[in-house]
Length: 496
Image 1 (cartoon, rainbow, N blue to C red):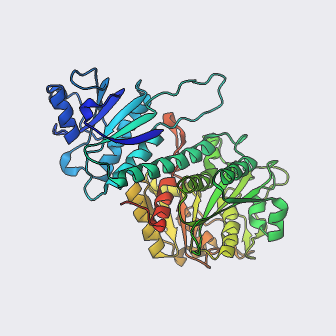
Image 2: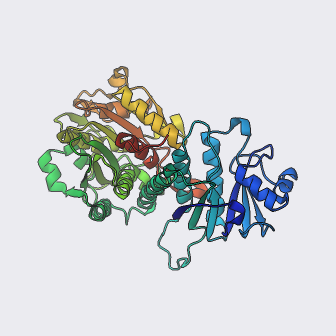
């Protein structure tokens, strides 16, 4: 998507569609008032008739309104004026994005005259650009016949009344870069496991490193064996697709200690010998979304040339049943030397992440954040609205929670108390990989915490947020917005 900023009157802007905002009580934004005057009250008359739903994000399309240069005027509901804030703004832009993506117009004009309480113009521009570009996402899935002409508005002009605030252009650039990272994460998640296997993820990372000039190293099974990654290797033993440990190093932050992102890249999860039920098993291709999001964040960072030092570790593995598969009751030794009794081969994410977390120590990181579709228990606890967050450092947790609030890619902190540790005790190893049905997301994170004692660490469980089911089935690209905002803050470029 192409978004540019120009100065001009909205009613004089030639475009396939001109977007304006209206509150539930019929009050129009300044740009909307100008358009209403130019159309001799056609917009306000439609609002008085009740043609526009009051909920934020509802839209009303007016064709060929006399008095304006645009072919169509799209009125977007902003909800109730007294409660207008971050959420209503995002909902309104989301409704606009959907209308533009499904509409006939190839270009659009969007006046930037709406202020969100407590937010800067840069925040408004970044949020709008991200949501608009994400709304235009299309998965280029394998079909015999593909659409030759892209649908919807691909060019958007942002209109300002005066000389454009530099924050707006900067915000748009950041928002588009975040949407690019989300699109890559979505593509990786939406591809079938027969395509997006560990080798495919490794090649994607290599191509990205070549494009943006950062180092990518891919460790093979033999390399992992030399490192003693017995836990991670136990998960992929029965698959014909060899495990890949992807190491990405982006270094533009001078002498600063690096931030390390660790992504779970389970390209397909059958559950192994502890086989999952067949219902919705196709959605286990999304079990690599933590790794996909990690690679997506690197695209965002590379596109912006962000001044940070960043390391990405993606353990790309496929969990399959077979004659060489791990069994319940097996004991494996992790890279840290700690031994693990495997009680359930479907609690595999922690088995691959623990070795990656140990490997992260060699970078002497400022902090480590892992992204993983780790537990179904997190879906039960938080549903699809918030990711689960657990950390061994309260300041890091607070920083990430704030970024989630700012972007709408929200997380909720759960406790990480040693009171839960008895659930992971084993009679035959240092720990087991399963804590039972109670507090499953917490015990999963507590397991990982035993491998993250050397640094500040946070775990983001995206099992409920990385993908959606039903008619809109697909990967969401989360938590790329949250993590990108975190990195923007560390780089000193975030506009709250």
